[in-house]
Length: 232
Image 1 (cartoon, helix red, strand yellow):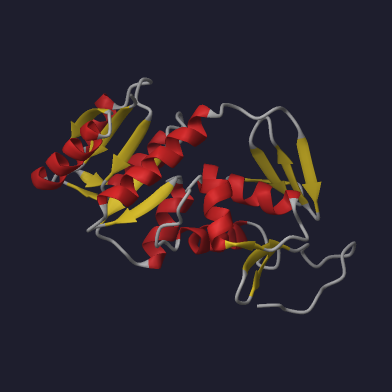
Image 2: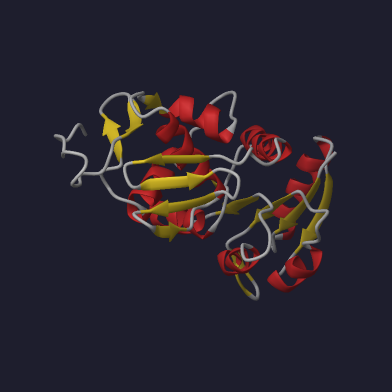
């Protein structure tokens, strides 16, 4: 049983989420405002479902504040379906993004994936460097050309997987399975949004789209690495 915080001001949706999660064996706390959520987010909470629009502000603002002191998995559950909103939520620190109306089985699958990832524990201290990018796996820190880059947990996992396999092309389904832990790939643009975020934070040429297949890591053009032709 896991302790989950649901931050949702719509009574009907909050009740539906509580019933869904309780049936799945979780202990659920509901907060209707950001203020209530701040009080309810104790160290015992293992995952948060966070609405975007709340009576006393925006959920993403609360998430931004939380990321300064906790890495608890957060899934944004909102009616805002635009790709720009998805990217904003993921860049701020959301681990996943689900739009309303949602399918209950898909949401519970995403929750289980996040909880499994959290249960794996910290990585052994190692350093992975390639073409201007350095990842400290122990500290979970990333530097690009000597400057620190702040990544979300899923961005970090995606970048690590691609860098560890620089010549391999991964399909979206493979990435969803290897990074997000989904056994069955839901209908989602999560991978695309995370790739866009990494391209923005690092270098657009580091992750290349291979048409009809998926993505792979590609070194950024520079004095040590000759530029290559576009593949996307």
